[in-house]
Length: 205
Image 1 (spheres, helix red, strand yellow):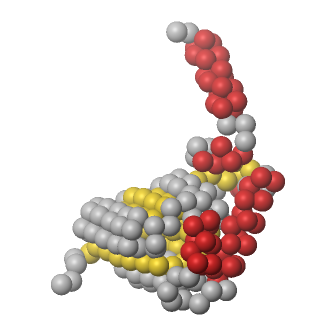
Image 2: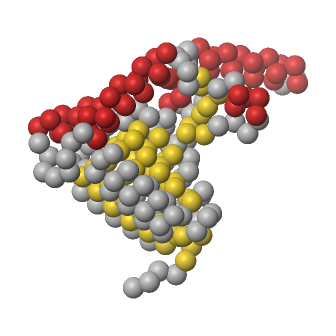
């Protein structure tokens, strides 16, 4: 294949990709660059914020029908997760909990891409799980371009207070993330990481 033909093929692929992701929402979910100011996305975030405000106005304790309805509507998969408000999200619908999860107060889950949390995982207060990313080029940032990469957190994970999990990270089953850690890369199953950036440390008994 000649260079000219290859270039034409690449352009055709790019146009086909654009046609498949005409909506900014579809681009966002596909991990492509998207415009965060798109009216549909703005409306979806506003809906999630209203639901999160309803949750924040509730009292921590046994889940009543009203709170159950809010959590079911806000989240992609609630599965009975114990979430102590306030709890902050972008959309909510891209967050999926397996059974037995616990989140302490003031957690932030920016879910422009999927966030999946495994069974029995415990998440401390003020933890941030951030799928949202921005271009490194300042001109593109100024233009409002954003993107996202999914985050996977395994089963039986413990994330300490004020830890930050950055876009694209996978945390393996049974891992521990120390308080205040900034997790920039995958965490192996059973590992303990701490620090900024987070690095493996010897686990204490």
